[in-house]
Length: 329
Image (tube, rainbow, N blue to C red; front, side, top):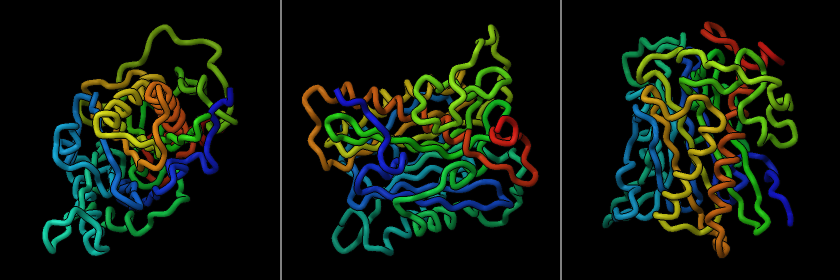
């Protein structure tokens, strides 16, 4: 049997019909990331963290009327960052995108935010900067994009290290592609103890996050969380070209959380707002029995994407934590 392998870019844009844009502000140490579909995407969501911040996620429930969305937004800024999705909606409306209501167009843009207000960046704005960051991220949408300390990952941290924006993909034997995009800003640790080894090491492909392999020993105790209630959150998007309905997309988002739990210890805490969107472009039929393989692949992609986001973070002035490459590279 052919083993799954990463797509050409090892990015979520290996799913045909998707593009990603990042916008960030170095002084702010924060930003926004947009996933844009060439066509509206069937989307589900599942929340497992105890402190989420979201926009328009209720309409993604399987029994709600709206069947597809135009874009998904991940942003820093805590509650202020929800404005990034409004900037994206405004930009899409100007492009003629959106749900048709008579002569009006209403873009459907769910979003999720993470807490990065205490990361050393300047937060003394008079006007919320996130709508402009969202609109700039929309303008930047492309098939190729940068990972690490960019977009929604610009101000991320994890236990002891900088976090970041990560992505990874797999092409299954059926030809279906599944991929993840994630902003990693967890209470927990992505690496084992004080060393360079990633919890996600068993799932690494082609040294995509350093090739250090498994940790030689596992510490018997974990350090206490370094962040306070509500100061974290890992937010992710899974995407596939397999044709899914809303219940199937919701199940895919649920399955992907396994990947978060394998790559971050602890995950899904009361301090995090951990959330996964799942989006389908519907370009390939889902093979018979394919839902099981798809969910497993989604979890593997999310684990790898989390490690890549931390691995590719880069240093900047006034950082409160080192990045992986500075400490271990």
